[in-house]
Length: 399
Ligand code: F0G
Image 1 (cartoon, protein in one colour):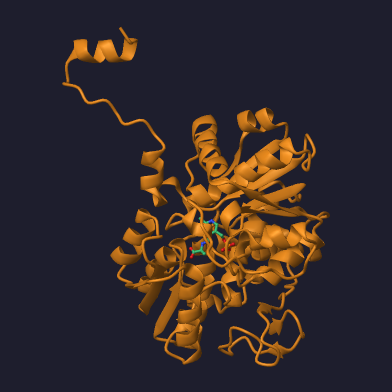
Image 2 (tube, helix red, strand yellow):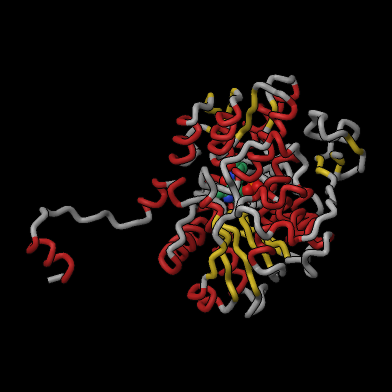
């Protein structure tokens, strides 16, 4: 069943609806609560479909690029520097380089079940890259709306190269999402933004994997960047499902980080509110999370409050330094939005909001190569010399 998160009205899994027809609120998939022991996962391949019993789709229709099963790296040096036990879940290792592939695998599988021909999304980049790839794999027409001039180069290249029909919108992500939702409501396409509750069903597998990676334990805290607010809601749903199944005994504090210029959720948490005030003109170098009116804000706020978590903002400078810090301390290359989780961790440790010694998992959501321009701009240009031993010696010895 699909259920409205506000009025509780229930709908069938095959109804094509994105908000509650009764009250207009957003929807969630009711947990399946399969009767399985966690031992069944043991011998399976390390993809998100390892947990297939918890996924609300027909197994025979699965469209997959073997997403999930991403690296879970202990970051000893950075953790020691910050005084915490730090792990990083590297979502850039997914097939198209971001966590979106998890949601898209379930979303496109649902599109196969429903038999729709055309799928679409608005995107700050990664969702479009992922949808383009999965739609192709499923043989579906794919339409993506992107905010003009605000999508990182790698993501744009992916969406175009996988053959999506890319339309540049003169406006921001929030406006593009409103436009594509209107098209979806007219039945012109199946909407695969995270307002579609099946997307979050895939993304909840990040929560499954984190507790599995830790040997069936919850970390003290999970920290991640928040844009449209789907992922934080999904990971919380995942850990709760495994908690309710008896696979873990504790739950993590969900901690969302937003860019200072696009922080409606952090603002709401600061004010102790259950609703956001949209940010009119969101702005940040982390274009992936340049969002002013997150559709899953109510779910995200519940995740943060119910888990006794936190929300924090970070500046663009803090994001860029954290991106470099992670790359140069631990060898993990992530795009700016993903580095917001590390920047947020650093800030929350410095302000004393996070206790020393906490066990923390930062979810780094997308690969460094998604945004090569920002990476190159942050570095000193290489020197150019002849392939001559003396010229090289003088450079590397500094003499
Ligand atoms: N990190 C990256 C790399 C993202 O691409 C996104 C969202 C987020 C974090 C935030 O996740 O929206 O679930 O809170 N990108 C979307 C897109 C909006 O269109 O690719 P969220």
